[in-house]
Every structure is written in structure tokens, then in C-alpha cells.
Image (cartoon, rainbow, N blue to C red; front, side):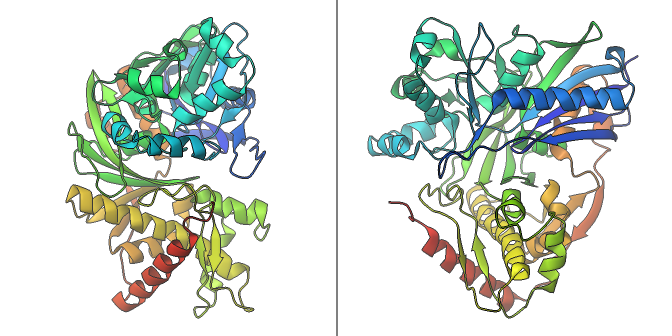
Length: 493
């Protein structure tokens, strides 16, 4: 009898493998960071081969550390950074270009042309998305238009496209399966979320041949097998990272929401089988499709959250590790109001301003690394305020508590400031690994490893942060934030 489920959690800055036992407890995690390539301002790339080697490496390490063989693993689930785009030669298995990351902004001009030609309402209606460089569509077009031989390969039927889940599935199954799930497909900007099919009109305007596209499956489908010691281990769940976190937070019912604090910050509200149209810059997306039934969600997207802390560490080199920001924030001068707007990749919900760029306001001669660290943490919470305000306006649902997860929210200063600025209780579970947990739950259910009743008993709150900030102080924070956002927008010509 197999005793474990493995989640492969392929993120924007690192690849991880997470081992779950029969009690749905995390036994072990292996993780490795990989290289971020910034070739030009606004360009962000990953090496797909490095991603595959890194992901395979952490899986191999996880099994070896725990003395596990193929017979011990009941199923694998895959969760991944979304929108990041890979095109590869199906005969050689080699990418024809680096993966263009979801944060990349090189296709702004293409997006502006689509908007000028009145495609945004059509994209909105068909995909639930806005026209933005964030999504896969214009990234695929860029590779086809700019990489020598790409279109020739596509025309001959020898080129394959995938988001990172598809790239991993193809490699894990040794090229036998070219597939994705509905949650990832819904992030491409050419998948019709009403019919749950690739959309011919959008493919045509983007000049993307349908021959390169993967098969779209239910999120809990069988995506082929990975062999360990000659044993076939079924890949039994695939979910985009934010949808996986929603599932892992057990937000299975309409009206339940979560916010994930990772590289970016993403809030999702389950809207059930109803597709809700947003008037406030939220995205309508597929949370998951199971047993041929779609569950929809409203999503608010903050492009830069944890990666702003990484910028403090790697870019400015004013901290050695992310954990230092909590101590620095608590030590900062309460009269020195530094406001950081981390719009390094533009602004997401509700502004959707591709031309915005990062800025720091309110600096004085007394401002130092403590004030910068505090301003960065506050910016994560203030961006979330903008998203939640839009979500409550569109849905008509007033949240009493917000479920949170992700590495950044382990920071107590951030969690308390978030509760204060939202006037909503923040529920932080003991298990912050909601992304890996969500896809593990789905994979385990798929092979009968767990029951739904058992999983629903697993949610356990570690700490509840209640709002205790005075209204006058909150309004001052919000006023400074709104002023800073206004001055940041439209920076690029």
C-alpha cells in the first residue's frame, strides 16, 4: 500500500517537492532556487531546462532523503507559476527560446495595439481577462515572431507550446503527454472560459497556430505517469498555483476567499458555477474543473509582493534574509512615513497599468533601511487593500475574515498591518503551504488516498490577527498610498 502523495510546486523563483503522509501532514520539503534572467528592463526569463533539472532534482532528493521507492508514492500533483510561456521542439525536446515569465512586459506595444483595435471587450467576454502583457497570449506571439525558425517549426507540426505545468508533464512522461488543465489554460488569453475550449478568433488575431496547443483536461484528470524504479506513478492533479492555494485553503464553497503572499500576491474568491463579471478590474478565471464541472473565481492580481522583499535582499542588499524585515519594520521611526510602490512590473488589480514603475516617496535624511523595509511590507498590505475593496464591491460579499497563506505572511508585522488596514481579521493557518497542499489534496482524492470528509477536518488556524488600528491613522496610511499610486502611474511613455 502506497503511503505518500508528492506535490511538485514549481514557482517563480524556486522549485520544490513536498511529501505528504496518510494523515495529510507535510513530512518533508526540498527546495532549490533557480536563475532569474533580466536581459533588458521589463524583460524576465527563465531557462526551461534549468527549471526541469531543478524540479527533477528536488524530487529525486526528496525521495532519497526519505528512503522512498516508487511503490511508496500513490500519486503526484503539479502546481505551477502561471502564464509563463515555453515553446519547444517536440522532436528534440529542447526549448527554442527561454521561458518568458509572467512578470515580463516586453509585449506592452502588442497589447496596446489590440486595445486600440477594440479587442479588449472581446477578450474580456471570452476569457475573463484583460488585454495585458501578464498573460501568455502575446508572449507566444512574440516568440513566434522573433525567434528564427519558430513559425516554420509550427507549420510543420513540430513545435509545442505550454505553460510550466505542460512543460513538466511532457518531461515527466518522456514526451508521451502534451496537456494542461483548465485553470492554467484560462490564464493564456486565448482560452474561452465559457465553452472551455481554445478560442479560434483569439488565436487568429494573435497569429498562433492551434497545432502547437496542448490538450485541456479536468484539473483532477490522469495526466500520464512518471516512472520511479519501473513503477508508474500517476500524475493525478494539475492546478495553477493560486487556484491550488484556494483549494488547499478548503475554499470550496461559493463566497469563500483566500490571499496568497508569494512572489506576487493573489486573492481569489470562489463564485461557484456562476461566472461573475467585474466592474473593478478583477479577473474572472477558472478555479478548477473537476468531473467536467467548472468552478469559477474572481481574482485580484498584485504582481510584486514577496519579490519586493527579495529586491531588498538581492537588489539593494540592505538585508541578508527576508526574516530581517520584521525586526527592521518594528524598529522604524514612526514619524518617518516612507511609502514604497513596488510597481516593478507595472500595476495589476484594479489599475492594470503596464506603464507604471516602482517608486519610493517621502524619503528624508533620516530614512534608512528600517523605513524602507517597513514601507515595503506595508506596500504588500496596501496593494491587497486595493484588491479586496474591488472584490467586495463586485461580489457584494463583505468578508469577515480572510484566509491567508504563502511565505511572506509568516511575517507578523505584515499580518498585523494587513488586518489593521483591511479592518478584517486575518486567519493564518498552521500550514502555510496551501499551494502544495491543494494539489496534493486533489491528487489524493483522485486515487482514493483521502476522502473529502477527512480533508475538510484538516484546516487548523495558527493565529488570528484582529484589526486594532484607529480609523484616523488608517485613513492617513490610505491617503498617502493613493497619492503615491497616482504619481507612479503612466511612468513609461
